[in-house]
Image (tube, rainbow, N blue to C red; front, side, top):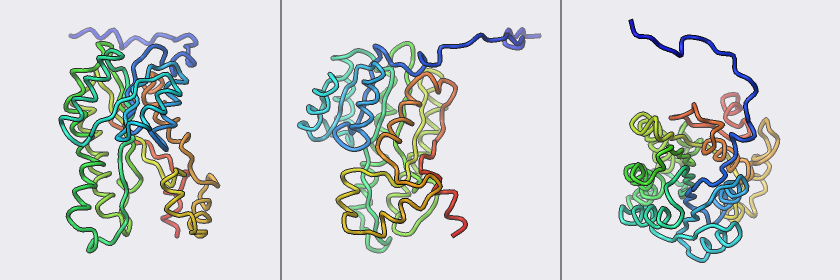
Length: 266
């Protein structure tokens, strides 16, 4: 009979929960760090003590956030294999092996299925799914021996169907499935999770709906009573990257102010 030491219950004393969320001295890679949720996530990781590699297609934006938080700016095309390898090599050459990754890269396109077209569909694939696949395939060689945690930004569009979301929703659904598969294949050394935001106020979203009063009214008609902010999503990513979530992997956390619980009644 195999002896399992874990079968004996041991009472635990009070643990250092504040310490579990700290990232002191850890190297965290933030992809899409130049604006919006990514920028706020870079601030969050640095605020908890991480050394942050700040990746953005726009080198000026990468340099700006890196200067503010004392991080390392990196600019490359994360949708290609060459770009992913460049990012990982540059980051680890500068700051050492990775302990965490927060990946916010993605683009949205909302249009009728019959009007989307192959080029847009391919862009949705590159920016919302392909880059994540390439990252996970290369990541193990660049991870600290103590392990790492990866957190992606998916979307509630990947969890339920919606009109005008065919291409975007399909890619986010693929990302959510990829998260589950990668968690199984890369564990226990690497944990993989995702955050699925609802409507979140970003610079891009504000510009798109600036004159649509109905949109802003609807965004408040959720149980939480307000639209999401970038720090709401950054906080969830921080949870996944930190040791507070050390027994959580392969999961998608919905952060939508409760909106998804209302739609079934409308």
